[in-house]
Image (cartoon, rainbow, N blue to C red):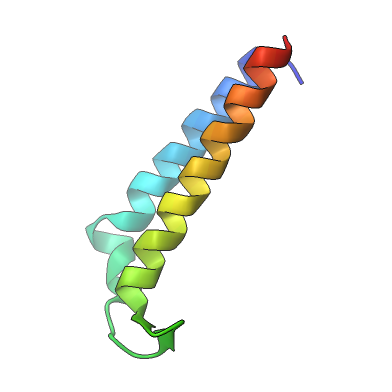
Amino acid sequence: MKPQHLHRLVIAFFVLYLVAVTWPLAMWVSDPLPLIFGLPLPLAWSILWIVLGFVVLLVLDWFTERS
């Protein structure tokens, strides 16, 4: 994969990340139930996006070190 394409995908992911954890879209998961692994849904939603962001940054680092 070309570095330019990868950087664009990463930027698109983090724009989606921004939209997913801010007001309009985060309201969809604002109900405290159901519990996911004992965590309220809004907290689990935030943790999910943090973990996904970490994985995307690891992939970006891996691809940039290879080229």
